[in-house]
Length: 409
Image (tube, rainbow, N blue to C red; front, top):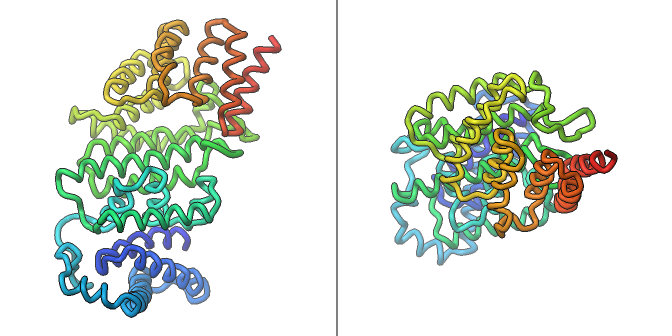
């Protein structure tokens, strides 16, 4: 039932927002309908038409809220109805919406409004489209619930102030908005796959939610190459998650993972998506990252990895995306192909990048390459610096263990 309610929530929210044009009130109405369903369905059983039941209950509550709002702000409402913008008009409930767009996609575009900063976009997307409660999102993002609630409230207010409308952006703005949508899903997935803080290396619920939302976008926009690329990247990467931690939750590096624990169904699906999209010869960052993950997935053993192909893909990705983390990953691949000295040379090209200031990964990668080069004392110092900078406890324990092992030698 929980999965069903999570699936229905964004659908009903999108319908009410389209019909009435009041995002805040629509969300409140849907939350009350969800509460009613969670209370009644376990005792009374599932209704014959759960979506219709939810829509009816939420619509009734929406009507009550609108009447209350109208009574409180009658003059403003009367002025708005005298000159109602055409883009706020919607068809009757029994008339299907015109065009081939989907309300859930419009809701995603609204939650990823460019007036919001990325943390607000992530929180609002998880709440409105993902169907997660404020408490669930707060736990996932390691934030106090009150802080998260304020963030969502401010985000909705900011959208209203910026003139956000429940409609598909025009052709010129659509590509930019879609980039934001994909980036938000990418951020959600990354936070799930490698948690930035806390006791766990990953948060599976965030990975699962990001993949679910990416599947939804892919169903709505199957011909957009980067949408396929992002979904493929998530699937191919998340397939390795079962092997990334040991019995006690400790980090297991790629070279030591039991590849028999990788999820082959996810790998096969990701490779199929990639195989279908790459021949179009419109490579973007998500497709390239998916291709790199596919090379790893196709290697039966770590020693069988085609590092030359990975280096070539990272070179193209580095030219497309000005991202120092990409360069860090390329340095590791170059070291695997041409030796640690070559990898350290690549690493130095981003050592002074201000975006990496205080980032533990720079020191972790440098420590690894210096260890491979035989510079034990420098590697120990780098590992300890990286451990001090990270807020992920599994990563900190792993880095300190590497330093301790070298120190013992």
